[in-house]
Amino acid sequence: MGVALPVIAAVLTSVPIIAIALVSVASRLEDRDWTVAGPPPSTARTLARRIVGFHAGGIEWLLHAGRGRDEQYPADAKRPHQRKTAA
Figure 1 (tube, helix red, strand yellow):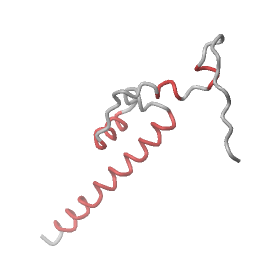
Figure 2 (tube, rainbow, N blue to C red; figure 1 turned 45 degrees about the horizontal axis):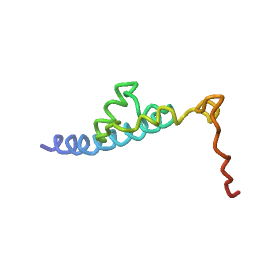
Figure 3 (cartoon, helix red, strand yellow; figure 1 turned 135 degrees about the vertical axis):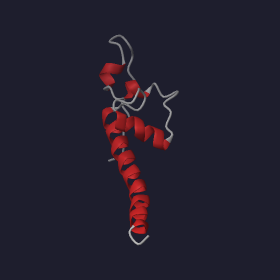
Figure 4 (cartoon, helix red, strand yellow; figure 1 turned 180 degrees about the vertical axis):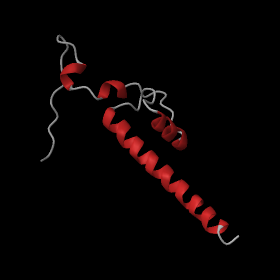
């Protein structure tokens, strides 16, 4: 019993830390690669989505949001005015 209690405590402490690290790294990679709206590209990202309970329904517009402004509009379409931002 003297050895089992620290081992159980170590496992119970490390599992949430590993889950937090997995979810944070996977979400950063999904944000960087613009893959949130599609199917997960790896098993780690699939596991992270299951841990968080993420469902990508209704966010298909994100697949096109990563493109540049010139790629979103056809050549003959009128483009919106540039927004001025405060410096």
